[in-house]
Image 1 (cartoon, protein in one colour):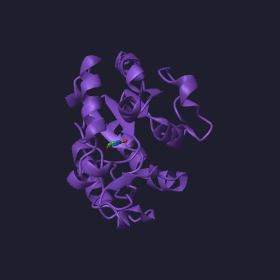
Image 2 (cartoon, rainbow, N blue to C red; image 1 turned 90 degrees about the vertical axis):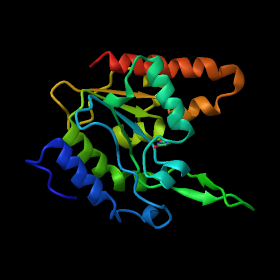
Image 3 (cartoon, helix red, strand yellow; image 1 turned 180 degrees about the horizontal axis):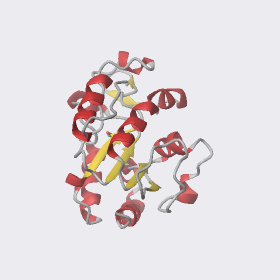
Image 4 (cartoon, protein in one colour; image 1 turned 120 degrees about the horizontal axis):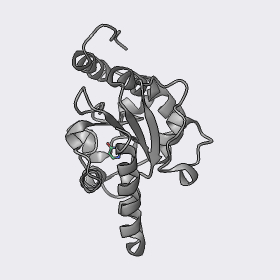
Length: 210
Ligand code: URA
């Protein structure tokens, strides 16, 4: 990982993105098309942390550009959040997948804790440079990767959480966790509207900290 001290945030993020392309911190690089580094303005006040890039993100090289990303951008707008002021990233920066039987489809596989821990220094480096006001972990994999395996998302979603000790903080940082947007996509028809509204409300609460 490059030394980013003394660089402007914009330059430091470019250096980190470039260095991450060659990451061999775990085996996931071997089957992914590319590293999907975080993206957004260097002066973003809010950082949203997802699990890992999906199939479309892996092909295009940008976070949250597939179906979950489309939904995320819609709910951000509903929460009154301008997505041009947000940094989008993931705890794991390579797509973990397996082949679907009898087809060329690539199916999402949840990253292991070891893979998430191997990737964690990239997230910490992003936060060191960005020093955001608010970080929101999206989903249980992101939340437990940052806060530890004992963290219970169902109990603490939408609450202002203690800032994790080893995560670099800005002067007045707040930490939140909520559901992953794919939980809305997966929700049964009868629960989709309420699940989506819950995500909107949690994001609006986090944005109010800014
Ligand atoms: N899901 C994530 O967690 N991150 C992405 O970038 C896309 C889908």
